[in-house]
Structure formats: structure tokens, C-alpha cells
Image 1 (cartoon, rainbow, N blue to C red):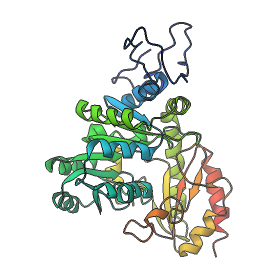
Image 2 (image 1 turned 60 degrees about the vertical axis):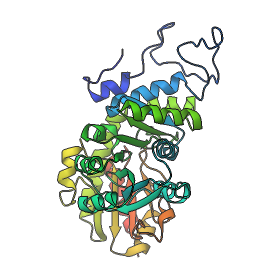
Image 3 (image 1 turned 30 degrees about the horizontal axis):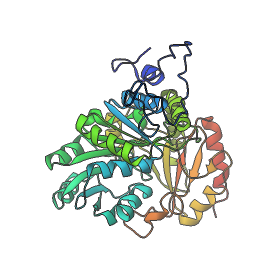
Image 4 (image 1 turned 30 degrees about the vertical axis):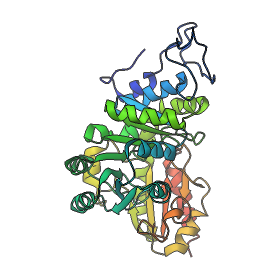
Length: 387
């Protein structure tokens, strides 16, 4: 069965790019490990396949699945989220171009743009994406090619109006790139709101099981797609067949997992809000969150990511981060298991000392699919260790 855009999300997740194998009828498409393909005469390719870097049926199935779920026409799968971002920037920018990005962007994204591609001649300006006037000024001040935003952002959970930001970018002749990793295509579809490009670390919610690293780019413009596809082929940072297979398998259950992640995130955030040790809870599902109404407008639910700041400062945050048992202290997010992260020294260590630095009293929670009562009990016992 093939999926179409008029079908529901979960139907598309299960069926897009997943037609049964015609020879045997196997309902799960076979995993293709081959690095090269036999030709029926010189240049006479079977179904377009020539060499594994240029095309692989397992990767192509994943790419069809990703495009169907994000509402795009083309998707490209990469070996990591940063490989996807690097390929996107090299495909669509040139030395002298500029990127305006959120001032709380993921540390790895900022490191790539500022320290790797900065030497290639790509400039950048971090700005508060919730301040549209500031964004417009920053865009106008340079030869801006991309406005780059995460919403919700990592780890401060800021919510940005995608539709309004798209207008700012397009009025200046720039493209809007949305990192949709935290929301996933189940909770939010930026292309439908005016974004030009969506990027993902598929390592996170899309893969969903903390067992595969990958990235993706999704677009709905044929000209952009052609340029991105060329760099994917020419540079070769593609996802391998097993990685593509594992990502596809995870993506099929994204909708049901995100419902549970969101329910658990909401429950944990509401519990944290009542704790006297807590200075602030950063979760868009709380009515007190400044982006709550906007998040309700452009998201299906609010996701499983919760950040919390402690009155006891760095010492309190570190002690809680090192005192849980159901929450595992580890990098990354979006897996079925709950993870605890201290961003200042872990995921965002590369932006210490810059305006993107994360508060030292903040920990980031990735609420998994365990029972919410167990997550709360784990946090409650960890709070007893706060000095």
C-alpha cells in the first residue's frame, strides 16, 4: 500500500515508501546492503541504481517516508544531523553569505556555522527569534541567505512564530530553515507554515530508540532539492543502509511515541512547577510559558522536552543531574528512555563564554515513554540531595 498526503499521519508513517516486496510479498521491504549494482549494458541502469553513495533502495524508502510526513516533495537522509546541516549550507550558500540564527541555538549547529563554515566565509548573527524587529534588522544588515530557527529551541524551549518569521525572511530574499528536531513532524510541520527547509537530527525522536545516528533535510521546492541532492551525492555523507532501516523502523511508531512523550513531559513539568527548589520550568505546555498560545496554534502537542532552573544554582542542578536512576545522565534526547542532561558542560559546552551560553543552573530532561509516576518519583528522590 502506498500512502498519500490526504491520509492521516500514522497511516503515512507506516506505509509511505514501504510497499511490500513484490517477489515474495514480504510486508517489510528488504534491507539492501549492496555498495554497487549490476548494469544491463554500459549506462543502462536498473531502476536508476548505480553506486551506493548515489542511491540505495533502503535509504530511498526512508527519504520517501520523511517527505510524506513533513509535507515535502523531496527528503535527503544523512549520516548525522550536523552532516545534513553542513550539506545544506554548502549547497545553498557561498562565501560572503550570512546566516541569522537563534541566540539559543544548539551548540553543535553554532559550532559548525561559526567555527567550521566561518572560515569558509559564511558569517552569522545570533538574535532573539521572538523579536521579529530584531530579526528583520539583522537580516537587512548583511547578505543574509538563511534565517535559521529551532522551535521549540534547545534547551531554553523558546517558541518562534514560524509563519511570521517566514515573511521576514522572504521579504528580504532569504530562506527560512527550521530545525524541527524537538517537535518532530508529528507535532509540527514547518513547511506548511511557510518554511523553505526543514532539518532534523533523526537520531532523536524520529529514530526514537537511541540506537542510530542520522540527519535529514526536507524541502518542497524542486530547485532547492536539486542543489541539495547534488551535494548529498558529491560529498557523500549519506546514511548507511542499516542506519536508514533503523530510522525507518523508528519513524513508523513516531506518532504513538510522541503522544506518550508529550503526556509525560506535561506531567513532569506540572510537578516541577510546584516544587520550592525550582526557579523556573521551561515547557510550552504550561500556560505560564510565554510561548504557550503560539505553541498551541502551531503544534499538535507540546513534546517531551522539559528544562528546569534551580534556585540553588549550579550546585543544585549538578546534584540532581547526578542523582537519578530512571533518568539516565547522557547526551542526546528523544529516545524511549528518559535522559538527563546538564547542557552547560555537555551538549552546549561549545558555546560557553558566548551569548549562546546556557545558564549553569539549568538541566534538560528528555521524558521517555516510561510511566509518568516513576519519572516523578525519580526526580523527587533526586531533589532530596540538593544541598
